[in-house]
Image 1 (cartoon, protein in one colour):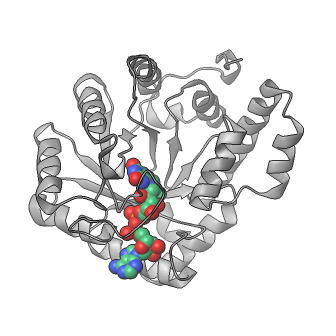
Image 2 (cartoon, rainbow, N blue to C red):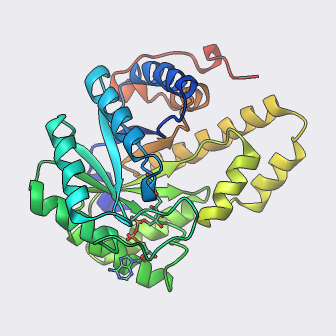
Length: 302
Ligand code: FAD
């Protein structure tokens, strides 16, 4: 973990583009609450295959123009042409956006790879962004402590991750995980290959366990048996589950930060209270200069 300790810590939140006016209003409220914490940026996901691409752009522009935090659009290349990607990248630069999360992407159908686009893998997109915009953007890429499900093996996946770093990525955000050892081992394997960019843990708070279990199944990120059993055992006690999940995630973040993780990227799922509780449990506002509150003063959804 030595390579990670030298980096300034970065704290960020991830949103998805809302589909309805009601969803847009919820996101606006969430963003206004979370920007008080002074995160480095809000990232916004992007649906490969066209489903949410315009909404991603609109949400990013909204954040960039109206929020005190930076916006970080996700951009995936799986089904896109060089021309279309160039148009989007330049439009973001025009809006003053400074970050891009560069991904291969997954199709909404879950059919995974093999897109019709000009690029096959994220390393090619990173190279392309560098080619057309030089050092303008801070480029984030995805990392998989439990390995990407399509990789032929753990070491091949690490080699492919290194390829993205060599293509010009500045920093990485991991897929979510609940097992800190997976992250430490991944970072150490990357260090052995000379990687020293920040690899920021992506942390998914436990807000809705059934939904979380579906996400985990889809992206093959493990929910440890003890955690799943606990959550199943509290099925009829939603409040207890929420509190327990906050405790587990607070401990996980604490452990990672103590070990030298260079920040946390919270998968906020467009909701504020649970991530705010975790944030204040960790006292992160002392570091970011954000608003400080007592965790118990944040009301949880019932
Ligand atoms: P890549 O790095 O291209 O890797 C994909 C697979 O190909 C891996 O198995 C890798 O080992 C292999 N590979 C890579 N390069 C090569 C190569 N040159 N030769 C052979 N094999 C190679 N998806 C979305 O659709 N929208 C989002 O907004 C989104 N946001 C995400 C945010 C984060 C932080 C993360 C971690 C994931 C996100 N995803 C998103 C999911 C992501 O798109 C999928 O996990 C996708 O399957 C892989 O994307 P990647 O950029 O990691 O791909």
